[in-house]
Image (cartoon, rainbow, N blue to C red):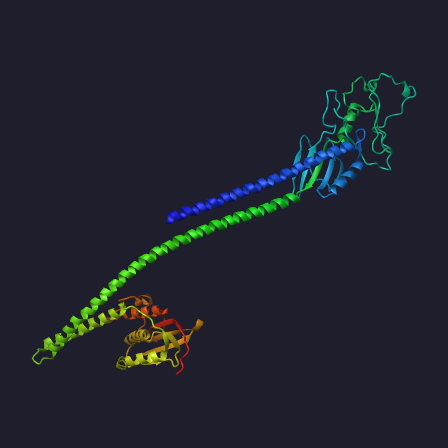
Length: 518
């Protein structure tokens, strides 16, 4: 049974552990999915921003002021916390929102960093600064972000086309020129007058790749143009998204997983307790069945022993009568009379033991009724009057003892045995007290104590067992009968310490009733 119980408990714990591991894995999956959704959202925003920049640039040039106004409008929408445009060197060329605390160097691929409340994503975008052709030029027109205009600074001349020489009028351009001039104007005409030419002779003999309509200005060297592209050319975005939706989702999912694991634990514990109670109930039923069989067997043996004891009393009475007749004859020698008296004494002793045994084996049927303790103790004292006078024992009975609910005959028998033991225990001129006190729940406590030799502490629980006695002439059934009567009433009895000396027997849980009207 124990092995089976341990096996079931181990199985329940294993199932609960599997549920817990499963919920942890599911929570990690949900959290990872939420993170992936947010990362994909950042990429969608990056693509949208790229298209937005494409739409905002004019001839490959966008204004930082105009871009930051547009970016600020996106940030104030609530989903984004920060936006920044980066060049090839990882430097911010335009930004909006809170400052971005991110190491954006080495942008060869997308970078992601999770913060406590934000997700920072760096996405490299092909806007004409990261694809280079075999001619040393970009395959697309680069997107250049012009810095903010400083009203106190002189006009910018980085991309201004110089005045056309008089010797080369506009109309003198050959009609079959394969590289027509392209005039590029930025978003702010006051600060930008961007003009680029595609004349092959001004490119020092280099051919322009197909599809490229914004090239290096003729007054810039290749090194200066590349440096300008690295510094002002748009290469990527830094996006800082709020992780509040992820936190709400993961927190709600975590609480749900915790509740599932908790419910699984409670269910496993409930099944374990139910199994334990079932095993205990089965064990108790088996014990009750065995106890019932044993009780039936003992009852049969008790009836047989009581019948045997009753039948044994008849021969003992005959033996006692013959011994008395022999002792009363005139011609009986003194030695025979002495032995006849011994026979009478022994038969009386055996008869008393048989009477005690029959009394002990008799079933206790309690017939409850109101009973005054003063009346019951008084009748028992009158029955023990000869013994009390013989040893000059003083019996002190508390006046106005309470009325209780009890079987009158059985209670008198119990009081008789207790007082008779007290009379035997005290010395010549001893004292015995009978007291009572009210307790909680309408019950009373009855004490019978003396100033005799008392009961040893190790014998205070053994003296209620059958045939246990500390007196040479005792049968060992007197207190066992008292215990039977007390248990039949639903009371309790115990031998408690008595100071300074003597024995104290205490009966508890005696139900107090009102004194009946005369």
